[in-house]
Image 1 (cartoon, helix red, strand yellow):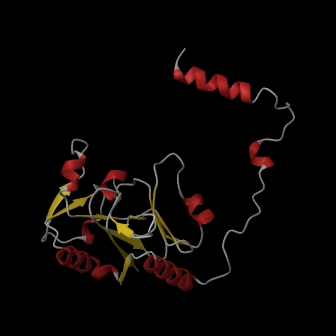
Image 2: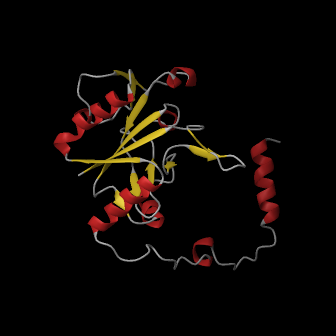
Length: 213
């Protein structure tokens, strides 16, 4: 018997006492919760996103489309990046030809190789204002999960306002549940029993968010 057969067998035994007329899960679970807390204009929703990102110690920048390349290259230079990891579908206008050496994400690259890369630049799938959260889903402009988790410096570009939503329920409606998602609220951080905060333990130590509008 395989592990799959064992698991399915346990599921069948657990469901053995469920009556045939029991309502399906979709009908049994109430979904009348608030979809967002209060009413806001689009501008105020974007402002709330920026405030909560900053509250999580992310560094927030704003720029117009014509300025994004210059801003991204300046942030890489200020960080002293010699190599920058680039997902395959990153819009070419987000970076200029000059600057750090670009490293393309390859399946053959080991975590040790990725750890030597100074920065990564990605897009995002959606940004949640109420929680200050960026969600990446592995789309071409974001790449695989590991490229946003290993380098020490992450620059994430958010298209404003089309990628900004107010709440988690609204974000979930935009996400494909079949795709792997990474939810990011500020730089990676943890605290010990003395409440000493340490950043960069299991992800980027520095998160910079570019609100592109």
